[in-house]
Image (cartoon, rainbow, N blue to C red; front, side, top):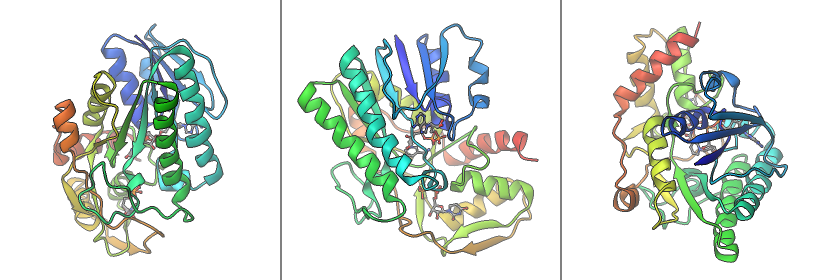
Length: 309
Ligand code: NAD
Ligand code: UDP
C-alpha cells in the first residue's frame, strides 16, 4: 500500500514510518518540522519506498494514497502552548484537510487522538465512553479541544460522507528519539538525571500517569488501521500507573544519578490522575502492551545516553 504519515518526522511518526516500511509498504512522510526533525528519519532516506514532503497540514494537499495516519500536531505542553492558535488550527483545519483528502482519494484515515480528551478525569481508569472533564478556556485547551474537534470531524465525515475512519486515543507514550528539549516528563527527567541536574517534579508529585513504550503503541495503531470491524475510538496505553514522584526516583536510579529531586509549581489544569482502561483494545484488536516499563525505560535511556552531553 501507499501510506501517508503526517507528523512522520516526529517521535511516534518516525517509529511508525519505520515499521510500515518494514512491513513492505510505500511511505510518504509529511511534516512541517515544527517539533519533528530530519535526524529522526535520516536512516529511512536510503529506501526507495520512502518519500519526504515538507508541508503544513493547515494547507490542502493532494496525494494518491491508500491510508493516512494523521499524527501532525505538537504533543508536548511546552510546544503546543508556544503558539496555541496554530495548535488549534493544526487539529481543526489540518484534520479537515486530511479528511478531505481521504474522501477524495477514498483512503482510510486514522486520527492520533489523545487521553487529553478526558481532561482532568473524574472517572478512573478512563474508558472510551467517558465524556471527559476539559476546561475549554485554559492553557491546555488549544490541544485538548483541538483534538476533541478532530474526533468530531472524523465522526461527521464518517456519518455524512462515509469516509473510512479510525480513532485511537493515545495515552502517554515514550521511547527513543523523544526530542531532548521536548519538555515532557520522560525526556526532562532523563536529561536531568544524565546531566546530574536537579530533577524537576511539578506539584507534590502525587499526580499519576501511565507510560506506554512506543513500539507497543505503533503495533496497536497498525492493528487498528488494518481491521474492518471497528472504527473506535479506542484507548491505547500501558495501564501500569505511577505517581510522578515515584517515576522520578525510578529514572534517577536507572541513570545511577546523583541528581537532587526538587519541586516546582504544578502547571495550571495539570490532570491529577490518568490511566487507560484498555479492555476494548484487548477485546476488539487482541492488543495489549508487551514491553514493561523497566525494559522500555532502559531502551530509552540507552538512546538518551548517546545524545546527552
Ligand atoms: P511530536 O511533537 O514528536 O510529533 C509531531 C509531529 O508533527 C512533528 O514532527 C511536527 O513537526 C509535526 N507537525 C506539527 N504540526 C504540524 C503541521 N501543522 N503540519 C505538519 N506537521 C506538523 O509528538 P509525538 O509525541 O510524536 O505525537 C504524535 C501524535 O500523537 C500527535 O498528534 C500527538 O497529539 C499524539 N499523541 C502523542 C502522545 C504521546 O505521549 N507521545 C500522547 C497522545 C497523543
Ligand atoms: N512533569 C514534571 N516535571 C517535568 C515535566 C512534567 O513533574 O519536568 C509532570 C507534569 O506536571 C505532569 C506529568 O509530569 O503531571 C506528565 O507531564 P507531560 O508533560 O509529560 O504530559 P501530560 O501532562 O500531557 O500528560
